[in-house]
Length: 480
Image 1: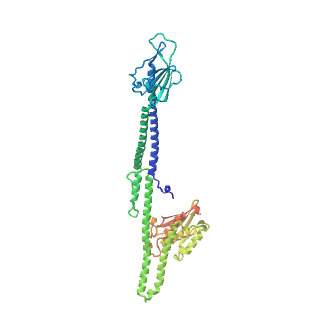
Image 2: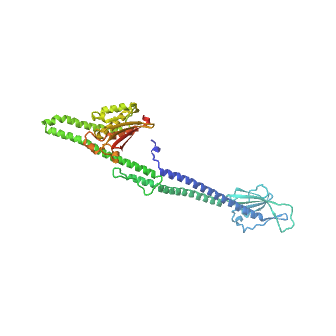
Image 3: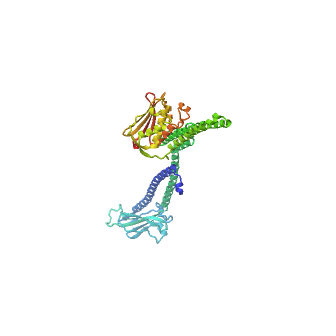
């Protein structure tokens, strides 16, 4: 098996990863949008600054009766002075250079770019400045404005071209700072989101951890325990309820197992003690005719009782296991009842007189014969033993559209309590009157219950009128 297959899946890890990824993508999209917007805004401000300077310089160009004048004062725009040489401008009259900034004087052979374009149009381009630095240039084609102080104007318009250039180093620094802030914010945001998500998921999974801690403290071998919670969580409550059911069932099973083990030991202890006692007496008094004459038959009788107990226990275990093979076949119910009567005649010589069989002779079933034989044999045997002496045992069968019900009824001294009706199907459970009989071991009805579960039958016991105990065996239609 590969390492990936061996790796345990984690709800917490999956939740943290998925939620963190979704929120991180959302944050990254927001930050990226903001970064691009800010970058665009900064570049627009830079371009707007070039446009404003160009518009200002164009207002300094006048047409005084067809004489173009440029009234520039360097003290107001020191960036164009030769000493600073940070920005540059150049003015053309037509195609001839009309004016250059003092900053261009440091680069006599350098000229700013000149482009042919319509009047009153401007264009911004990336441009390498005369000093070798990266920059941008704005080129604008315009008409020199007429001097308002001169009432007579020439009809000739003087076209001018202005180019100004500025370095983009500061702009690039600002953009880099914005990008770095964006990256750092994204990284910190991702880690912050993961931290917060982890805290939130841990808090959300606290009821699950609390449930696990309570499960660790459970001990079904001790007193009855259930998983309780101080506060109810909608998603956890169904799990807690099912676990409590599972715990209750297992505690009951454990209790039944302890009782069954104790009862088995009790049932086997008595015949074993009898064998030991009988053997000790025979050894001590080997010449006693009374002992030697009955010793063999007594040992055989006790051994047969032990064999019966062991066989019934094995049958109980077998009927409780799904490994038992079922072989459904068509059988006539009345024939099966007659066979059971013959089997029980040696135990109950009066069975033919006491058993009132009201089952139709034509009724047939498709079931496992061994299972049904064992079930009915135990039910009739119990009815004959626990019923009032000489009182009739009633055996009936009713077939309807959904199932068949077979009932066995017998008279009793007094009705069984609800507790007794529930417990009679438990292994080795015996009514007080049966504990004095060495042939009754309390396994018959347990075997009946197990075989019913294995075959899909249902068996119920109830008190009916006139102190009658009735067992009803219901067979689903699919078996009939």
